[in-house]
Length: 139
Image (tube, rainbow, N blue to C red; front, side):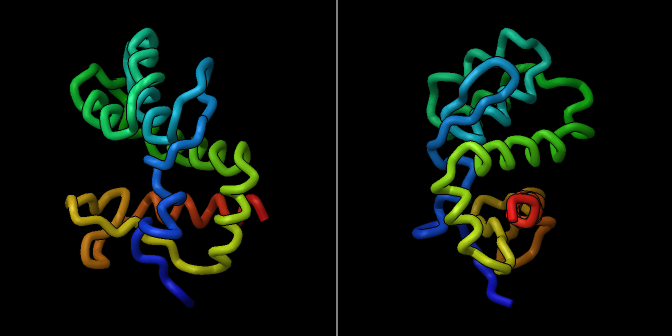
């Protein structure tokens, strides 16, 4: 089995930072990252802050606004629904995901995220697992 170890180059589209509009609850967000950070918010009015900013800014903002108290219980399900929405909404991205065939997808990173990805091949790789699940679901 082949392994895609990082979401760079031709595989950058697998990243949650990839620019593509995602519908979540009542709004379009410019990336999965923006929608995910908005979903974390305890106060629904705070979600609007994630609509017109870059994914990198959304990640930073998501760390300082008030999160839902039960977010840890919800985050994997929310991430799955947002990633599924990304590939259901954008035909071109769905085809590119399908073209990864049965490759293992790892969100390899240098910033130390072993929950969503891997560092030097080590980590829980939840984003990679969600992407592989979505790929299977859309076949």
